[in-house]
Amino acid sequence: MRSITYNFGLFAMIMTVILLPCQSYSEDGHSSQEDAKQALLSFIVPNAPPEALQAAIGGKKALSRLLKQNESHARDLGFSSAAEADDSQTELGEPFPFFFISVDKLKSYTEKANPIPLFISSLQFLYPLNAVGSGNGPPLSSLTVARVPKRVAPNEEWRAIGWGAPKLIRFLVSAQQKGHASSSRFIVRIEELGRYFLGDLRDKELFIIPLIDDGKYGFLAGTPLSAEVAFLKLVQEAQRISRSAYRNEPMSTDNSKTRRSP
Image (cartoon, rainbow, N blue to C red):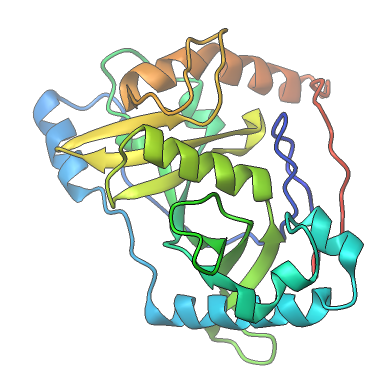
């Protein structure tokens, strides 16, 4: 299984990345206000199907077996010890659906444009791994499940594809609590920018909740912004990334070590 650590500033991610079929919501980012309202009504935050939950349960058991004799790897994935990662000591939290943002679309985003077309829904869910009985305490780690092609058949199945990302899942849960996010919250990933946010669809509005403070853009961890305002702040960064890629000049990033997932 391939594994990769995403570049995300302070966040060390230990996950497996699989390209999945995605659904985009529109092609016209400059629709009228009425069109924007209709697009928002059509924006669906998916719930994890029972098959995804079963894959997560299986992934949690597999993680417990694999870490039983590997203290170092257990700590890499966010646990204090292999015993803390035992299947009997952890429980799954409510999963976060993944949405991705296309930099190609983001770089052309303009004021008063409809933000819905920027979002691409993917059949992936990030489950918090909590200590049994921890209540509202921070997660220990996380695991990701996705709908992927079967290994020996042409059909698809839900499968655990990654473990770890302890800092990311803790920041997501913290942002959810501080920002009073609704049950329709989700992960927003801008891969080329190395950025994560918490998205929230509530009160017929779409919000973006920063995970960390960023004085450059005025982002405050846990403080919701309208999606329009948040994305306008990132347009120039998206344009710089695109120009750099076009010139084949790698951007300077804070690279983290790549480690092998279970």
